[in-house]
Length: 195
Image (cartoon, rainbow, N blue to C red; front, top):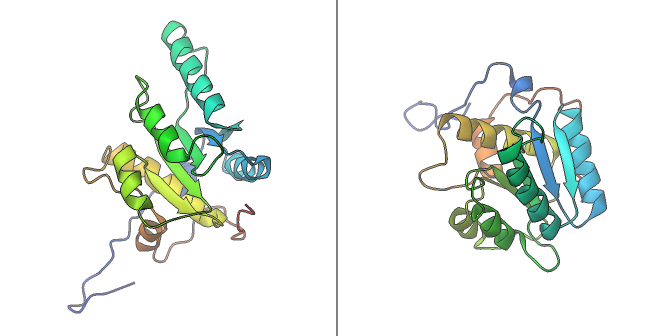
């Protein structure tokens, strides 16, 4: 526990019931131009009982999203809807920030949760994340535990609060403040994502 000068809890610790069910069953689009990165992210997601769909780049992602929107209007039960997008920020031709702007401009996708993962975090990224509507932000290399907790916090925040009024994305700092003492569920070891 972290206490302030008056002995009060300085960092609020959220306690969830059945943490193992928080992200189970999510349909996740994994966008990265690097096949190894997609493979590792998808492997972790499957271990958490999510359903990843790997996408090699922005153009393919936009095509999948538009097709899913068009198809779901005609046959709402026939095509899987996506619950979350995990995207790299720095990819050839289109960076992730521009990709998020394009996603947010598609009718019906303004509020889909989006988590950005980057190997080249730079000063000013947080401001851009707020401006374009990124819900979570994690620098690489990311620990498996951090990724799980980031997804859990993003999905929990959106389910309970909706989009944050201040637009601040969940970050590794949010994770540290939220999970002071409790280990995440089903984490045998805390492996780095090797990308």
